[in-house]
Image (cartoon, rainbow, N blue to C red):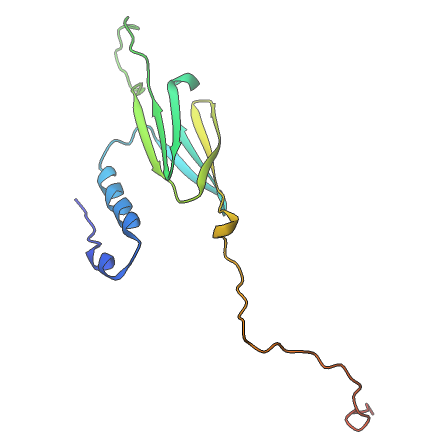
Length: 160
């Protein structure tokens, strides 16, 4: 198992504990199940799309929950009491699943849709106005002023 040791970084940084914990947890979770497959796209600086292959699931069998910094997508098939037939080969996965995605601060779900067996979840980052960078003026510095006046005739250079 490949495990990264973040101890040297933890000693020299302040306030990044959540990031290091997230990286360590993701490394452990990467060893797990890869069902269902998914894509993550970046559409613009502040827009993302998660696409999950959920073949065989209906919209009412899928649950999308957005919490602070966490998106959970789960699919639950109802228990079938009767057998659908005698399969010689069953290659289409038709099992329950749960996928978790860690979200950055201020990322929210803007839309979700299911079409052709693909679940698309659109995400957008909306930074509050109070959190956006702003220009700070320095007080106490002398302000420069523009002196308007007529240049002297001696100082003027005439083109020949």
